[in-house]
Length: 356
Image (cartoon, rainbow, N blue to C red; front, side):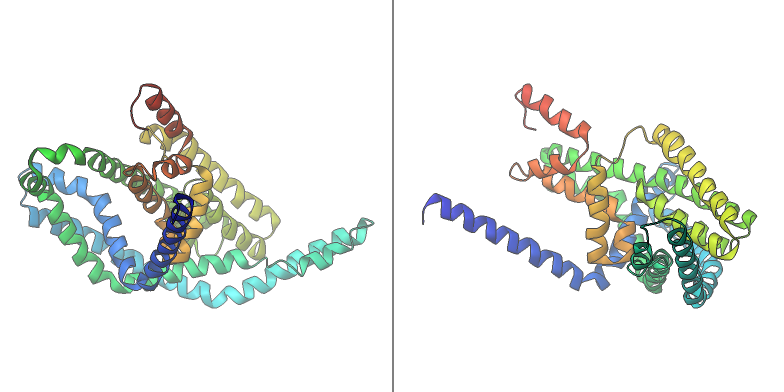
């Protein structure tokens, strides 16, 4: 077999391996999703636990204190929001029907007064204006299904936190001086934990303000919109848009165009203040991903792991990028899916004769 045929065969085998891995992950999602949620929570809480250990709190007590606090928060949120999710899901068909009537009426009004736009009515038959509300219901119900495994998630999280406190000692004992090769993954995990911690605080503030906004305007289920804003704020740029659309649509259906406009404007103000001013100053750096890749990752991880995969799409994509960077054969893919700053760094490294 000549070299060209060998290369083509290798590419086909690599593609087939990727397809098998993707569908294997999807098949095992029922087991992997609780583990991913546990890792996500551990990354957020490992810094407070290590701080407690530096204050001479035993590892097991520090881990139990963190987990107990999370259990309390989940219990309160679950009790309050769980009822709202059930009520919203039950009322969803009537909301969708009323929204469909409003949009069809608006299109008919425009088509009847402007010549040559009769096709607007046929266009309205092609769209589903209630899709955004159904999408919200699927996300929240998917999250509720995951939380049925709350004890598995919390026990896994405890063991991850306990291992985190001894990881450096074990690595030094196992690899000795070669621990320098683990510097990049260690920095990545530290930055990822810091990113998720700051993002959680920002998301909580965003959710609180979204809940107060919808409550003040009079939109139904303000706690639900607060929870949705909190969750979707983990998705950069497009997450805040996705969170605002269903709340504004419900305000339109329930109260009218004036309240819907006020709701949309309020969401814009909240997300401009937090997303464009406060968050960049606290972070000091971005997620290191192209905006297009953030969107593609949202769809890709959502396809594999469902609603939870969409919420964790950025951390998962950042982890995939780190894995691609670690191999010279796939480093070019990591550069393509990264930010412009990463590409400039790779160009500068090559100019200095260093690996990109």
